[in-house]
Image (cartoon, rainbow, N blue to C red):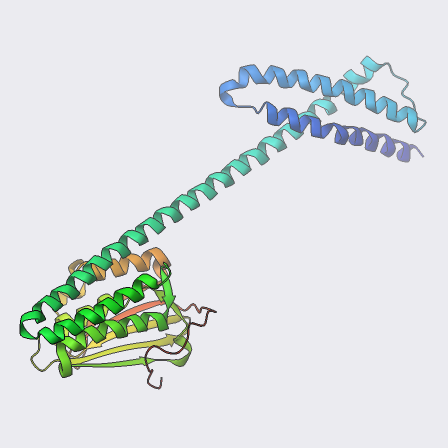
Length: 331
């Protein structure tokens, strides 16, 4: 019986503080303790502690009377006798509120920092893409202007192809990633311009594994590689050359390759320090989108020519965007 009575009175005391806890939480949030205002706020909290202790004792004594166990001690004696409990309980609640508030603020700072980092990353991607468009346009217009005097009809065809290509690019929703099918459709239009320029001197083959057509890749990721292969691997040869574009799956990675059968490049140019703006932008975009999970590598092929290889995470879109832009050879 004695143990049951003590347990009942102890629970009554904690129920009393449970009723007062929302008030303590409000006071703590209203007067959050800060080092710069400690001398002003600490006395206020001490006064609040005393006030809540008085209310707690009053409620406790009323509760004891209701359950048939009235207190035999005077009010002041009971208040002083339980002051340790009242002080400890009040400051535990204050400490928990401060801890939760500091945690919330830390999380808010992390969220804001992540949002800022995302905005900066987005701005950098946009800047890189805006840099890529003028670079691509300048080189294409230069190729067209070179053909105007020698072959005006071919130059006119190239301009028409370029207009169609730009229309396709403008109509495309703004996105940093597209399906491989869309990317290869863009490359097909770009190669169409170059085929008008080179005629039979430019031979092109495309090989894509069947399950990769809907894989997502960065928009315009292949264009600088194809342009380099044509300008530095094929255009320099009187007999022209062959351009090979391929996409294959390697476990959880997509491997995109652009190869030519030209003379290759010097070893110093295989290192990123020797790359031009197109390749540097390509690497920067891969880093922004995938971090260390993507890479670009150049190597001279054993049988002649240069191979540019992009490795990035395999991600598949659920959006169907229509039939294949290019015919894929069997994987």
